Length: 320
Image (tube, rainbow, N blue to C red; front, side, top):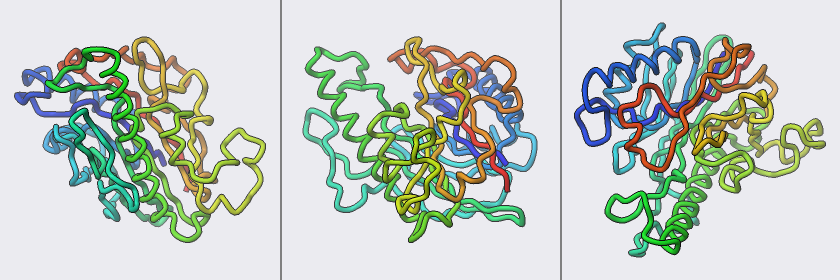
């Protein structure tokens, strides 16, 4: 059973301000995405950057098998939201954007404007079959790409760049805390008995402070001396599967020529015991060289008409 996450990169129908400029370009994007998904064959896939739910429906029509889409009701100002694709029946157990109490609003621009909710909702679903069961939450944290007043992507000076980087970091940290609060609810009193996954586009690498907010009590990360020793913290921990990904595959995006793993899958203690392997790209093609990803810059307009996605899927293979 494959569970994973994939940023579909600005999935809109054509004709709007953000999507492809024409139908042919749109169809090429859908075909590229569907080609990857039909080779990936996920049971449950968290998706990000769905700008138009109808576009995700169009994508579903191109998939082999009986897939359904489940979407968050909390999009950002561009309509971007998270969701799930699944070939099993799922039930929504949570969909929230509000920062957890007592976390206060964070400043987001020079005017002093604040936000008291995540830019995109965090959606959790549950499924249960005769063979297995799982609860998963998907999130999409604030991008490291900095935008400035007037729709600019270039700062007026270094002072402005530094301030807006601080605003973005504070918002991403608050959103990570929001996802972690939902994870606490899903884990319940003793997370060692719960099969929980938290996954998505965290917009930061494994060692980043914002990413590590999701882990919970430190001390037994994969690959550390404490990993094989049970302790009380296991009931609240989430483990990032990144160390299980082969080193040459351990990236999901290329930024200015630099490979980075910014899409993550976290699993609970019970679910960790069911992980067979983890990877990026398409698992059935792991013996081949990873598919090349485009190197992206700071202007999102450059890829408006590009096919496919600038992210690679990140996944775990689970035994029942």
